[in-house]
Amino acid sequence: MTYSPGSPGYPPTQPGGSYPGATPSFAKTDDAAKLPVYLTVAVVGLGLAVYLLNFGPTFTIGAELGPSAGGRAGDAGTAVLVAVLAALLAGLSLVPKAKSYAGMVAVIAVLGGLLAVTETINLPAGVSIGWAMWPLVACSVLQAIAAVVVVLLDAGVITAPTPRPKYDPYAQYG
Image (cartoon, rainbow, N blue to C red; front, top):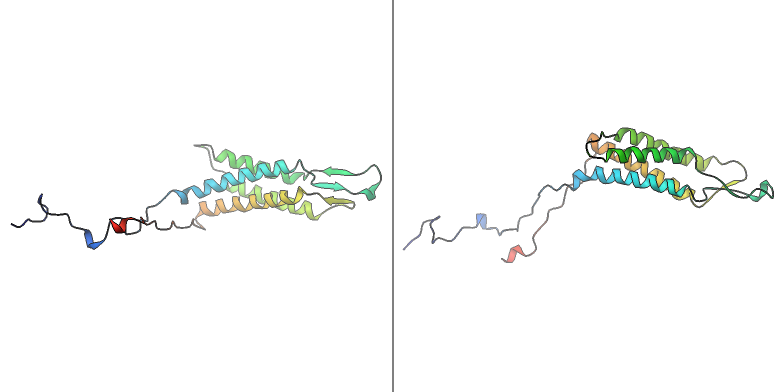
């Protein structure tokens, strides 16, 4: 007795001799779409880090200015204000249904990074750089890089990396 394909007693056929799960799944994940959001969160976090590092000794006054001089000379000034402004605007764009300020955040963050580098290079006589200034400059520059990458991703100049194919390791033996 013979059974025709599709009848109740006939075994189901495998398409092309492949096993289920043996082919890679290139299912589109939302990781590529979330990259600008992750970078925007990084801009906010780095701006908060710049603000907190400003409480450390960024600049110190040397003893050569006199016996009453010494200790902390001040903060990083305008660079911190600009980095915090960029972080606040980036945080505002994370709110659902809020307008995106990616371009403004990038411009302000780059300005903050440049100001931090400038304040590090242009020191008056008798003033030295404290330990908190170096991580402050690093966080400020990283904030600028992250903000610029968000703008470039939104503009389509650069694209997020493609997801790697995922294989089911046990599907071959089933």
